[in-house]
Length: 86
Image (tube, rainbow, N blue to C red; front, side, top):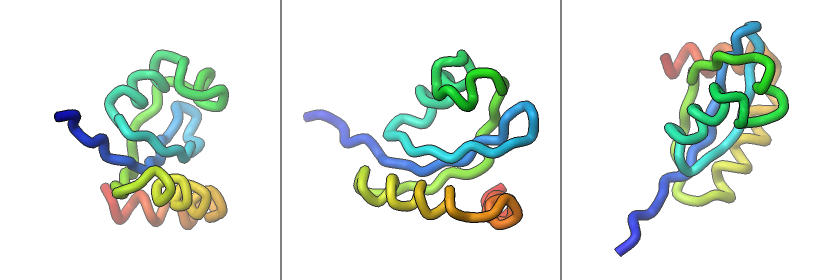
């Protein structure tokens, strides 16, 4: 039986202090890809990145919806969200 992957929305802090929001179903693999310069165009030149927020969801759709909600927040609101997680 195949193990069900967990869908997650995450926020990374880039080496230049900026924040990047995304979603994945394998956070370890995705974080490694970001730090290898293969995760996204935005993070490619801003490595290393570190995980500062993670929120699990049952479905891909929920994780993607939350990603969009977070992307609409101000930087101050995103930092407050991360402070509550750390």
